Amino acid sequence: MQFNKITKVAPLLPEQWSSSYISYWIPMQPDDDITSGYCWFDYKKNVCRIDGLFNPWSEKKTGHRLWMSEIMYPCTDESFKSKVSYTRDDMTKTSEFEAAVLNDEIDPCHELILSQDVLITCNAQYIGTSNILGHEVDEWFFQRPNGKGPATYYFISDTNHLVRMITGDPKVQASVRDFPNFNTYKIGQKIFQPEPLNK
Image 1 (cartoon, rainbow, N blue to C red):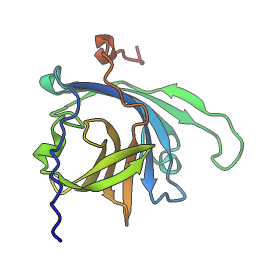
Image 2 (image 1 turned 60 degrees about the vertical axis):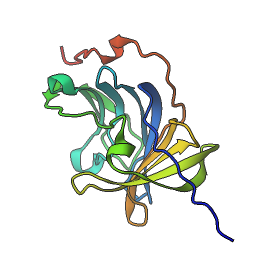
Image 3 (image 1 turned 135 degrees about the horizontal axis):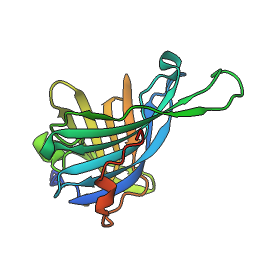
Image 4 (image 1 turned 180 degrees about the vertical axis):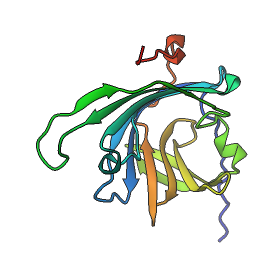
């Protein structure tokens, strides 16, 4: 008996979307953190924003945790970053965090951190289905540009609803981003207006 190969068409991400995210590692090491935040993407305006605790970020090496809000504007080659450090006296004992606003930064930005057509431009291959966050999902595997290694993105089956991104090799160590409330609600443009914290 001969079976027909299933052919799937790689989806484009929605023109406008946002979601909270959870960031962690496979496998988790003793010093690894699980963090969360929120992101907004508007591909028509070629802009995105990501707010959350930075991951990876070593509190042991730097002496603090780092929250950052980054707004990327490739059309003007600018990335606006507002930062807050969270420091405590002793990481091994009960202690309070002390928050301090750091200097705002403007860095070069040539492209968004996640493009709308990432699956297409990276020639992603459909590799099967699985169940993630209560959804049946399509798995898309590809090699990231510039030798950055493998990635697998998971979309609710036959849709452009992103549920999870894994970058790296899970057999060694990989970064995971879950999107539990991915949505396409209209994003107010004030979201993409930089508001410096260190005024």
